[in-house]
Length: 208
Length: 232
Ligand SMILES: [Zn+2]
Image (cartoon, rainbow over all chains, first blue to last red; front, side, top):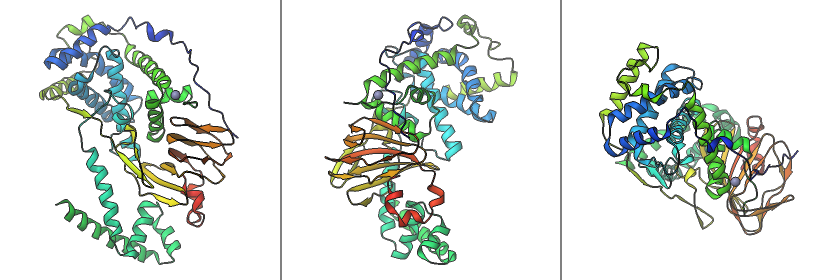
């Protein structure tokens, strides 16, 4: 059965988005953020912290099973606010929107780390917090490393290559490989071990 | 022109950060090319931000006093927060930002620039069958598989069915199936089991996400029946 895509109605009314919330003093928050950016003002930061931290803590507590993780979200989010305040542009949106984005990104990366055991911190690529810019990091090296890895795999003896490729690139289990290649499970395991030892040496050498 | 967009609910989950990385990436790629969805996302983000930070209204005047009493009722938490503030502000350095790195991929001698959302994700080596090439994106999301799928001019995907969902975002070029033509930027999410046979006259590059329920039970058959498992 085909479920059709619903096209977004172009005239959706967002009554609320235009009327700013009266409980939040947006001008004041923006001012503090600018003081943090321009003057590294700790007093302004403390005001921001007192306003946002308890709320972030409460929101994070509903998404993570333990308190330590929700504290990590507070710490990381507010730390990003301190270090990235210069990326905030009051002409583009409210301070709350910007801090929300920072918090959502931190939460996403931490949840991904907990669930998928990945520390790839993809959030700033998915939801850029500054237009056309990314924070400087190791990104490109990782990419190069994976190309290098593939090259090294291709240099392995055929028998080991088969096992490594099946296991890592085709995502087969060791048992599936044993069946597929018609070999005892022990042989698969030792070939994989041998290949990995070789890869380690090769990659180590290439990195030096 | 883009004709196919994510549903409103999906944009909402995207803004809330509730989608798996693979789907969030699909929406990010689409929004990059679609001003209409960009606009909706901006509005939704503003709304959810307001909502998140408005509860239990705190008067800013109270915050300006030096006492931390308005922080919370929990003394231990006050201490924790105070130590966080001094830890964070101990170092004055601000983050240096640079232009986003543009990453390119080559499929069958044609070079494509990847969207920012894909700029750092490890890519598996391309596997080729006929006019199709596929590179797996290493997102590590269990049964959800994400790939780049390239179709050479005149190529197509043999008729196939799916359990679960199948997302295709067209990064470049176009393809057609029985329901019509799809162009660069189109976001095509299909639920349920159905059959289709996409064909690309002039070639195309797609970002694809699928959770194939058969993934685990097929086992070794995947290799004997390469086409079936090759795509997703
Ligand atoms: Zn759109």
